[in-house]
Length: 346
Image (cartoon, rainbow, N blue to C red; front, side, top):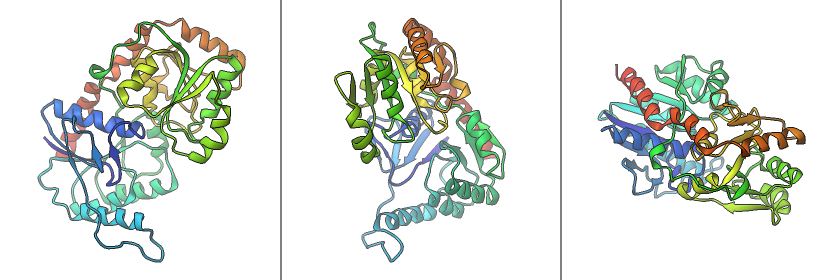
């Protein structure tokens, strides 16, 4: 099949990835290419060692700002309009992974059945976008977890399929033979991901913690996180995937403390695949990834529960975690989407 995956004209698929959606799209596109499909991905840019091609929508040479539209937003709308004029007839399937409403508005001009994967919790803006799109199209909608599907069903006018995200286990580095650190935390450093809860928990347990990820809210980092850093609590930077996997593998446990309901929580799966148990909140770990004691959901305000969870996690062998991650190999995700692509073609 000839497949077009659509993110957004401003989304970069270069490492280090901004988040789990970017990482997953790269894995899925490469996985499809490995199965012999021709894959193009509409995005801002991507690393050169991928097996898919990239398509870019160019900005206008003219100013796109007016009294109510910023230059940045105007250029995005201009790029989305180009997508509406884009000849999509050569593609067997178009698969959307986009958060940007205008991509769906202009895609309507193509008058074809698409596949749309929802990667984000329900919000007023996204609900309006997909309610309209689902009412005026026969697009196939997919959620990345059962929890996300349940959340979205009231907002869109079409049935929802569930296809869990996967990772390419064949590209992971070997798991560390020795655990060199107590705890790691991985994610965007922002209030929604709640790294402060992980820091406070580590301090209460008198354990070391290293935070990894992009600083997406500099004010939050400077005011709430940086003052808590010390010899035991460190920020390790925003790392390329292979290096990040190695750091995860070296820890006895990974904390995941999101305040919002994680749509899937790819970092939980990545941690298991690298042989590291996960301790998180109920919001952070969806039911598909709850495999106690390999993944434990607890109240981070309960110090005794935290200590008990950490001690249990530290006693788990890496091979137990890796075994649990095997069913989420990207090859299984590819097969599930191939089936959906066949439906979209009919």
